[in-house]
Length: 232
Image 1 (cartoon, rainbow, N blue to C red):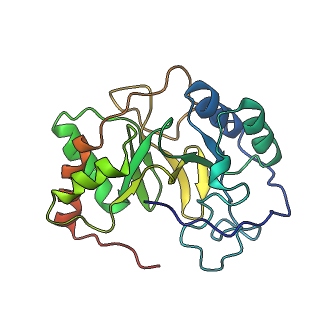
Image 2 (cartoon, rainbow, N blue to C red; image 1 turned 180 degrees about the horizontal axis):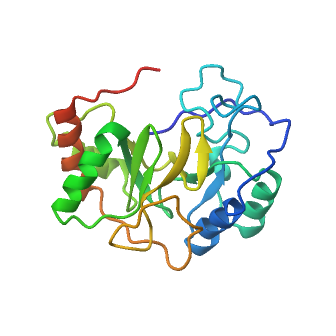
C-alpha cells in the first residue's frame, strides 16, 4: 500500500542531541546494503508524542517522510551524511521496493505470536522491526501484480495487515517515533534472530524471504486474534 505523506513544507529547525549511532546506521543501510533511505519528519519540538508536520491529526506521527519527500530516498553517501549531520535525531525511513526490501506489517499485539509460529514452522525469516504499535517483517521485493494474485486466492485479508511495496516506506532502527523506540526484534545478519536495539549494520545486506512464505501465518494469526484495522 502507499503510505500517507504529510504536506510538504520546510522544517524551520534542526534536531540536536542525536544518538551517535544514528548517522552510522543510516550510512550502513544506504552504502553498505544499497537500501534507499531518507530522514523522517520526527517529533514535534514540544515532545515526542506529536509530529513535526503541519497535520494536527497525522495518522503516523513522527514516522513518515516530510521534507524531503519519499522520492528523494537515496543510497548516496554524501546526501545521507548531510541529512543526518543536520538532523541527527531524524528517524531512518526506508523507501520500500527494489532495490531495497519490501515489507509486511501487523499490530504488535499479534506479531509476537505470528513470529513464534513462523519460527516453530522452521520458516527462514529475515529481519523483523519492532515498534510499540506495529512489527514489520522485511521481505524480498515483490510487485503489486504479484501481491494481488496472492491475496486474491484468500477468502479474507484483515485490514490491519499492511503491505509496503513500491511507493511505500517503513521506519528502521535505531529510530524514535511518536509511539516510542524502533528496534530489531529479529536482527539482521543472523539466522538465529538476534534481538535488541541493533548496532549500525555492517557487511552484506541480509537475506530476505519471499512474501508468500509469511502471508498465510500472518493472516491466520490476525483472523484468530480478531485484530482489525485502526481507525484514523
